[in-house]
Length: 454
Image 1 (cartoon, rainbow, N blue to C red):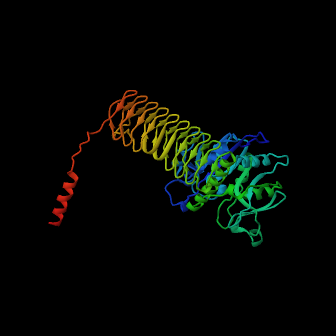
Image 2 (cartoon, rainbow, N blue to C red):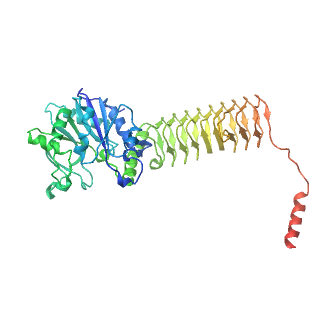
Image 3 (cartoon, rainbow, N blue to C red):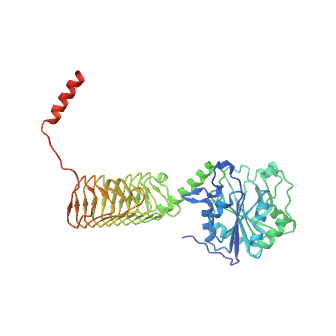
């Protein structure tokens, strides 16, 4: 369980910068809306912010405002930075939305989605500590510092912050880097930003300059550190894949720590909201899409795809099964190889072992669905339900043309096309009568051979 308790009770607001053009993504979709584990990056970040109970949230965008607004709650203010003149200028665009706010402001980035609530809480608590730093900056030490801005600090107190473009060789040798994330009191933030200039190599207004301006006022700022993975940014498809891989690795570790067995962890892919029980065994190459809940003691065989589905205790899934949204697999039920379910319920102990499609269907307890059975639920315009009673037996290669109901304990003969209801305990057979013509095949082969030789 995440501990989001804060030592300080001061209210805070979050300003999330998302005005970057995202040109390296080469996408019509706004950069911060690209998904990690089936959830937009921005939504990951907002969920972490919400865990701390913010008073207000402001998202600063450039182009693509409509896309962002369509993905966030109505209480989130979306403001536009145009033209884009740097991070300091971007944060300034949030000032009108927070005009009457007098708490702490947490500055975050929409393309840095993995920041944990605990880290945000540490930043705010450090800001509200007894020595009252003017700003709190989140630093990190990457394996390769590349072109990150550097933080020169002594025992957590910042002596200097400098952008890589403006740093000396000695400053570039420092390994403590600036993530860009910051916590500042609102009354200090707006006043300091008003004094930020653009006399630098890029001609931009840099947010980190507020630290040096505060220092010029003899007010010290503090740095706290996070692990590099937590502040990894996404500016390209390759970086998106790298952040996804990091998220998946940590989610797999959590699943195993909570009592699930992943036989080949690196091949199992979770969604942001996957719920998985204890003593679950997941074989290689299993994909969980959004909206999945797996009960205790479930076996999931390889190459299964599960999305929007609920699987009851002790059930068995796959291999090569596909559970689509609305699939509900009951306790100790079996969904076998090449079986697909959508908006369908499989009762306790029921079985669909091979090559079956169950759509808009309800299957009772203990029913057995034979190989090759399909529920014909769609006529090209509308969907219709199929109901199969408890203990019913559906013979192989049957087509149940909905709407249709098969009663409890009924049996459907193999190869049937069922278009009318079958009562409980009845036999339903719907197929053409078999005709046998002795000697016909031999005569046919002889005639064809003669014709070919002719």
